[in-house]
Amino acid sequence: MRQARSLVFVLGLLAACEPNAKIDPVTVQWMDWPAEVNAGQPFRTRLVVWGVCAINPQFRAGASADQSAVTFAPYFLVGNDHIECLTARTRALLAVIAIDTAGTAPGLAALSARSYEMRAPTLAFALSAGAQNLAVSKFGEVVVRRSGADASRRNAAGYVNIERDSLNCARVRPMGLYTPNAALVLEDQADTAGLSAALVTGYIHTATAAVCGETRVFRRVGGG
Image 1 (spheres, rainbow, N blue to C red):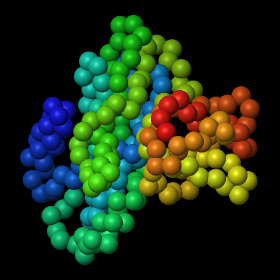
Image 2: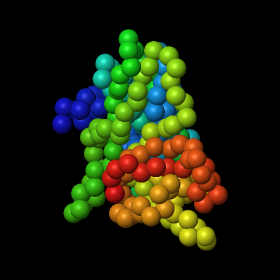
Image 3: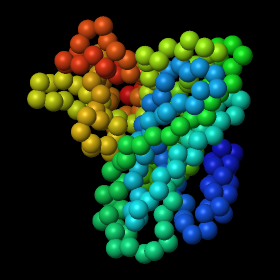
Image 4: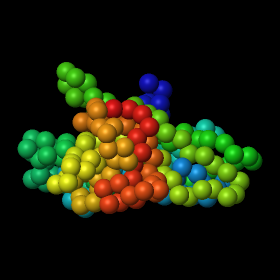
């Protein structure tokens, strides 16, 4: 609850700095980021977020860091003009359409190798109402080293759906994201149980042997 109040407070400050725009916060369905980074090195983090109904919305990742975690509080700056797309039908469509974007996490301090949490607001599913809130959740961790970080692996977590292509190859797709090549080949093709609208954790890496003709694959670790 304290985290949710803090996020609302931060968004309120941002709104005060943008007098001609409105803050429209969004939740994160999927996040992936380098498993290891060097101390003081900002790093790019992929964020899949829900879309908004607005003219020329401007995305802001809202990245911040403290001594224990990197937190993204993503939002869109939108105008105050009324537009026709603000209808019940369009809102229903936006509820299932996501946007593939990114944010830059600030450089993190580390005198020796240590971990920071990666956090962001997520969609809270209420079985009765499907309600959304701004509760911040842990997606995973990033290891910070003084030097020599291994850049070959990306940690990943979020809500996904399972899909199969014409060759019956299983892939996981971030929920609501329909862009081409957005789905990731599942390394363990037999490990598909519970992957329909599921929250999963894992990592993206280069496999020693190709899976479904691809070597860059997603290895599921938990969830589902």
